[in-house]
Length: 358
Image (tube, rainbow, N blue to C red; front, side, top):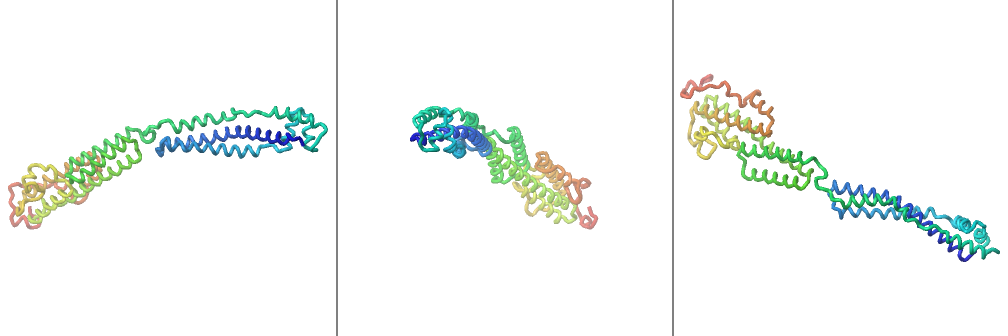
């Protein structure tokens, strides 16, 4: 065989490997880089990845190089096919084929010339075969490098602003209506400030979760006040109608205690404050009120409860239907005094304490 024939076969296979690798690398890189760009964009938008973190995804382009090389190797021509190609490119006179078949030939000199001609005609690698990967590479680079605003996803800002305004109104209504413990008020205000900071930093998911939790907490405070008002109204009804002055006054004191614990005793009317111990939501020690005084004080306190619950309902802290049920439902409610009449000059005697007495 010609000394240069084996080298020619190797050179042809190497050139074909390079060209095949370039063609396949362009196609494979197009797919891999586009997928990497989509993944980088998704992670930067949804998971808040930084550009330097997403840039690591571009290393997936190495897969295109490896897979293209593997597939290009599978396309390499065999030794016989390479010899046939060299013979055709060298003039197609069969001398190179004969040299390979016989290992020697009378036409070896001509075969050498034919081989030299074929080697000179080896195809040059075309780097333009990588062009298909360029758009995908540009897309992947943009997906990694282009700045993405923090507010790129999530609800429109007006939705967040509306939810925060509603939360502000609820908290203001609660603080105006109820006498909250200082530590509770400070905690609620601090939570609202943190929510506003999260909203300003563009964290919609955590912002709305925190808004829901704080809203539930405010509603729970209002629900406790509603339940306390329900019980206080029952006690006030007993205080107005119980023929026993001692029991009536005990019911009134129970109503006052419940109102104090629920924060319903804030900014009481002057008529109520004058009847109570200074700075306290309780009767002066040792004082026994008359039936007229008990009825008058109960009526004033009922008006306080009505006003407090109306404010909470207007601030959407309690359901207005529950307030109507409290006033109009069966059993003792805030409206149970509608038909109650009393004479302020009346002084109870033994007849008042009898069943059916006034």
